Image (cartoon, rainbow, N blue to C red; front, side, top):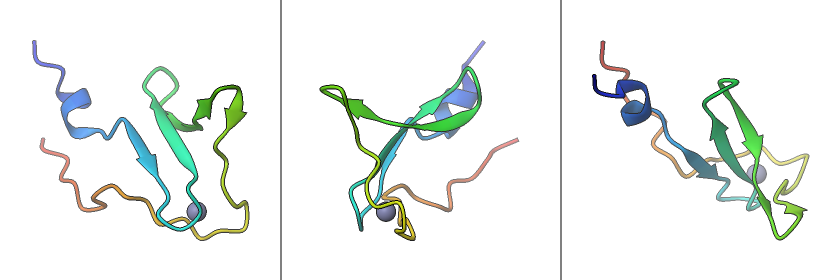
Length: 61
Ligand SMILES: [Zn+2]
């Protein structure tokens, strides 16, 4: 079987405003803040995040 969920779900995203980075946790089904070199890339907590992924990705059914 094809892993269709993987194909249509972005695996990571980055905020174009504050640099916050998140990775998709497929196990829990939620975004988690990415960690690099032990530092969480949480960006600006007050930022209205603008993610660099295409927000119009189509969930084929
Ligand atoms: Zn942001």
